[in-house]
Length: 138
Image 1 (cartoon, rainbow, N blue to C red):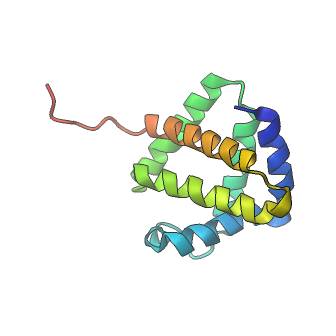
Image 2: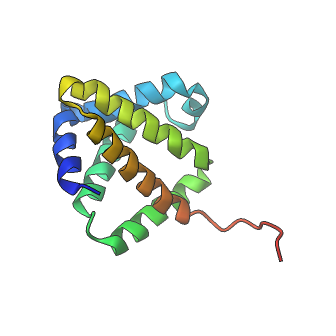
């Protein structure tokens, strides 16, 4: 993971008043309207929490233990809310779309690739926190 590129690219798109994450939710609900009932009508608080989470993850990229513990716990909470594995791909898609839109000409394909990889890694750590499912295998 290119930490410098992740930090730099976030600085390009991190708008005041959680504008990036607010736009992310707009795109998510446009593309995946079926997830909208999982959220309150006013997503501003959720957008603020998401922005804080993104910054925290970037601040801890070198701390594998923190990442696994924190994101695993967050994943466990998301599991209780009905978040399914395919929803993580939708989140990655919509976050990168919001970043690309806001970044405009300053946003590069390399930034999109780096964020896609980073968000997929976050999803993997969150999914690792999901309760084990009985597969019926012995």
